[in-house]
Length: 165
Image: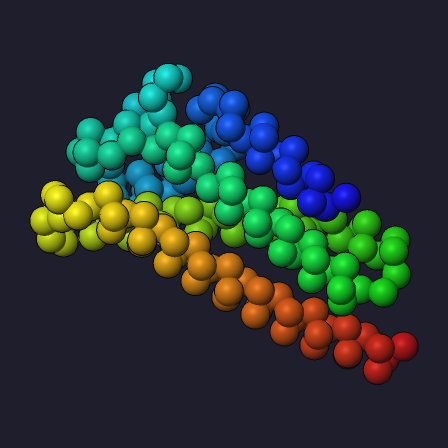
């Protein structure tokens, strides 16, 4: 069931436009604007344009795929760690919320690191490769960290709960 849901979400993601991803793009743009002190302009067909930074935050920067992966990973942790079915269902809104917040944080971090790398040195010829490598590294770092932290938290909390019950 989970795999079918993921496939459907990924199929939908292909046809999504900037306006459909406002829930992910706007908070990321706000974080980037706040930290870099760079105002942005939103254009429906382009995205959030930061003229000062020479960047555009558009649907390719939304982190939608990261959100799906993070949600799936946390859901699988809950399925594996929590025994009662109703508790699993009750935790679903928390998993969605955590995945959303973590996506905003990871995606903002990725964009800010990319801005730093761009301004730290001249990568005119290798920037595309560097940008992709940096994205993979940052997202992988966040996914592994999130997994380890949540697995530890689930294991610790559930073992404490079982001892007290």
